[in-house]
Length: 380
Image 1: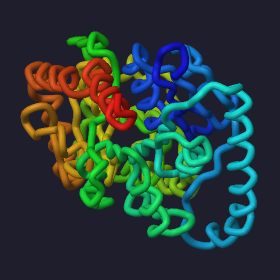
Image 2: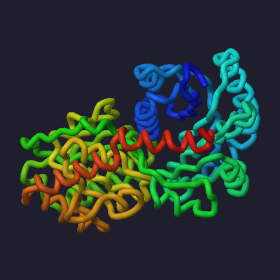
Image 3: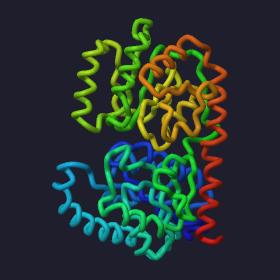
Image 4: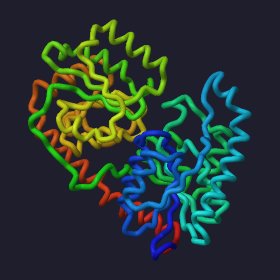
């Protein structure tokens, strides 16, 4: 322990601006700050480092080598360099951590993503407990696989002291029921008192992703927006996020021209604070395929923004059509949902959604559950 608190070393993976997984880790750290002394490993100086420093974390800036193998020719080009990079990174991270600890003891290493297995190996080197947060469906969402293969990945997973999937969809995808130490637990998204409602909505629909890739379904959303005819009623489409794939960006721009939507779409880039956009939006549309959780949908619920979402993956677990959201499976159904939020009063549905978010995704509720896991594996 450090200063009478459980000492936890968290492994983050953001490069550049914090993404959804990093923001979820930030909420996790805030939720347990009364019981935990947090130290966070980040990959570079910058916004992510500042984010964790702002809540009193010690921060170690050290390279972290991924544990994924991409598809196609890219995988072959990176294979040999990856092996040498992994050896170097694992050694350097251990050295950096031991230097910062300066004799202090870590109780738990908590890995925040399955993109990296360095936390597992670090926990072995430090002879301490390991928790693995399973957030992504690597294969179906991104076309990736673990660098050293699925068997080794599951072997390392099975040796962890606790495995936390962020939704039942992720839990079932990896068949985690075979491990007695595994559970699924929805993330915290914000403080319970951070809710808001603005009845004076602006005339735009919102799409939001930290990184825009094909799995986010922006092309599907554009088709739905065109089908809805809402552009003729003055409703714009606002897009938050940066394109991860230039080929996909080109595809989107071509589709915009084909659908004659150039004058009706606003590209806002990456947004550090999306709350203002969410509070004023007529609705947010989550068009992702195989979303692990769907953090932006929960944020919208807190901010009193009606949610339209694809009825699959994580969002299907906490969103109910006609109760706290509008759900769709096809572009045509999505267009109908868009027209519904414009034509029908959304207040009661929005309030139910907000209360559901407070009851199930607040830091106050989440922190107690995470602390119970920490106590359980440490036998406190």
